[in-house]
Image (cartoon, rainbow, N blue to C red; front, side):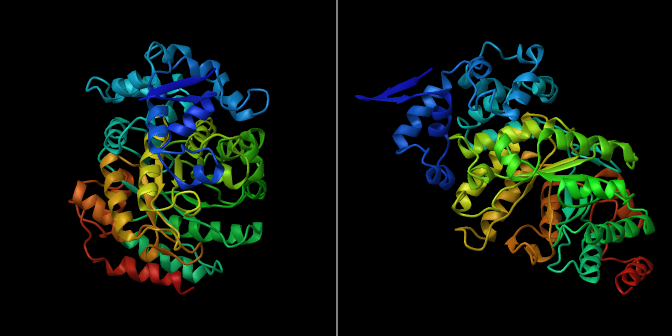
Length: 462
């Protein structure tokens, strides 16, 4: 089916829904690199106006990647629920935007919609929304998950403590973990990107984190962000696995480039669930995504990078994850050129993930060769805090010395909690108060518990 819109004397024609979505997407370098972006601002506006008139039902009949060729498409279509969709089934994409922005469309209504909408519908409506629209609607979404604590409650804001080290040195990692905990970081997860995927090295890191958690009875969860096959091997060996991690994409081909498919993720999900290590709940998966991964793997099928990204959220949703994290500026300026593009992409990802029922966090980050700086990240952090983002990263000094990119620091999390009146996960907050790290008002007590500090330093010096 083709689409068109006339501006003045010029008629813009779009051959199919895939092309229309790409041309309607806000400008970003990745779509230009792929050769699918609008060639002018006027063409983009024409595409957005044409997209606004597309009935939502169209997305159930015209897929962007053929059903027969792609297991992610099959997952999307086979799991779409018409009862939930009936809330909005008569609307166009433009009318869907208006419906989302109505005061009457509250948190409960949005939760009822989750199983009825497809990623392509959500990507489409986001392309018609201003940044403030994305913030406003995402703010109304509440996605709560649990393992050893409760993440995502309104009025709360969590962090992943990210104590990476370029050689996986245990003392360096332990020092970063202690530093983060003393700044109230780590309630989402203590998560290490390992320098190697060696099962033996990964197991050493798991034991290090689990020892710290058990010694101080910390109500949080740990994860080494290794490949899912490594996690499966370690589960069979009896390693202390809390969460199973995997990077995922929005097409079967991109997931193949990660060395995974849905069957493998199914196996990993069931294996991790069987460990039954959670005390507050059983959300055991941690996924990371990011706009551009499909293009970088030559696996985008001509679909724009934002729509591909949102299709990846259908994969994540299948496994009831504890955490989903869009690493928004990590791939580089070839995909998101500057601070403006990174900011827009992050707000899109957070909005789309939340609308699809996912516990979205954002790694607010950029590479050193991108046209972005820490001021851009401060602005984005504030926008995401207002939008109700579930969690961000806590990196020592905001500079990841292993992955070589700029993210957010322990202090950044304290800033956003302070200015917006947000608190850590409830169970973790109570632990911080008991340890004398934080007071009842949510303020640090300058680490006034010398016994705790001495014990933690003892762990670091072993």
